[in-house]
Length: 229
Image: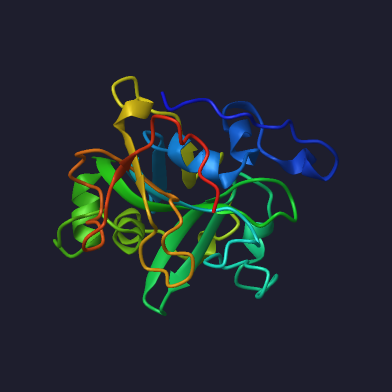
């Protein structure tokens, strides 16, 4: 699996943080983002199960991140309230008034931090995904497409990811990720801090969204294990 991160145990106000197999989500988004690769996102909406293996993520680690919806210049709003915790909940927002995007909230209460899920490798319910996407491919490459494929919407904002209808599940035995498979790059679709190396994805996976033109990919293994802004 991806390299273990040092995750503090939730205490005090963080008592509402996730426990059990999701306890590690209370860590720094820069460590959580690569560890999410290989995990599964599952939705069961209208009785229809759909799921995919996470193959691409982006970290938005805190108010110091100028690209974050909760950057210091913005503060807390009705739109970004879910980013303020607890960890292990979904932050779902509409991008440019058109597409829903889903994030995994990380860190502790009142410490706004999240990981954007950018691409999935479809696993379960492919026909339902095709129907929701109107037969358009790729099904779940890109944050808007994957939300459409899984039927996700703003009503799931703040939903705990340990519970249906939207759950974060451990990797299948054949879907575990080694650190050698993980590459990182600058983030996509942002204008501020766009070159911060906080996008993580699986090398040679066909479901990863296309890179920016001229983008240079870097392996996540080696001396740079922590990637500060």
